[in-house]
Length: 504
Image 1 (tube, rainbow, N blue to C red):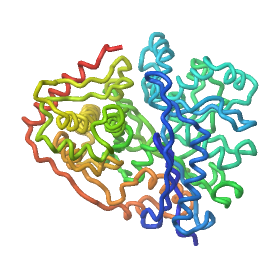
Image 2 (tube, rainbow, N blue to C red; image 1 turned 45 degrees about the vertical axis):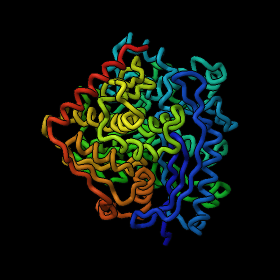
Image 3 (tube, rainbow, N blue to C red; image 1 turned 120 degrees about the horizontal axis):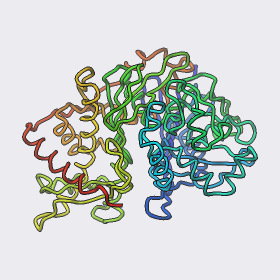
Image 4 (cartoon, rainbow, N blue to C red; image 1 turned 120 degrees about the vertical axis):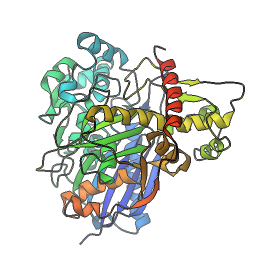
């Protein structure tokens, strides 16, 4: 019997491949970064051809590092940056344009018109989402409306659209030679085009966006033994392996953290920051700026749903301090710099570089550094940068509390992502939330979630209880500050947020 599961993690800044064993350990890994293409303010693109080449390369490198062959894997799972959209020619396999990234705001005029016609929440009762540039639907419409070759491809039936999972699955399963044009419910839900009740494309919304359904992938459960197809033997695995699962990256992290019960929550600190709160199998639409989204669906079962709060800039804010300001040489240096001061010196940094996401949803906001005095120094700014992620997380947790009014309580917060190694940030997060923050033994929970979904589909793991046994604690941060401290700092943060609004 094969001993491992392969997991492709196609993220915003890099593509990685990991090999996972039965106990949920990472046996080997490989990764490659790709360029962030910013042609003008607010625009962000990726080269999908480069991402596909990187995917093939990291698969081969990961297998070599583990000393195994593709045939030694029981299945492959895929997780990906959500909302980033690719348009390509189904007959040639060539993209019409660069991938438009989830952070990109180029479709703001389209969203403004949609909001003007029906309000920001006009589709929320079907999709669980507000109208915002974040989601894929307006990006697809921008491609059709702006690029004649895309419009022609739509009209002649050659154009395919898809999020990054779809693009990779299509290529892995044959590309122009019979590749599967497919996505799972979690990724489909992030387009603003999928109906949460039917789990299919909503024809009324497609008509409003003028997006034909034949250009979109089929929607299937997140964990399924046959729906996604198998890899081609001539591909990077050099074997026909079942693609057993696909999950958007944040849902994959929830799955990897084994947050299978209502009331459990995780927060991923990556390029952005994403909080997901499991609310069980009943759909609840938010009245406080959160997103309603499928958490996952196992084949033959009712989906599990989550409330989500999305933050655009977390680790990316640290990268900005490194690359644009030059205050640190590498991202990990920010903790030492922040520790040169004992507090933020009343300095706050709100990274609304492309507007504010949850719970505000304000595309007119722009970033600010507030509260500066002659006393402030680069240590205070470094601390304010780290605290910005924790403050934004607190705003989302507060929104969740308003939604459930004590019916579902957040007893602790499971955390993952690159920034969890920053102990100053994790302790501040526990203090400002007044809630225990728990870091798992295996921090690669996004890839782990994709592996779990694929492994469940093919019987590598028997059930969710089997997966729960793999989860273990690395460290726990407990609150050390009092209510007065939290109220004072939160008030300063709220004032800083107000300064970002109505800028554009």
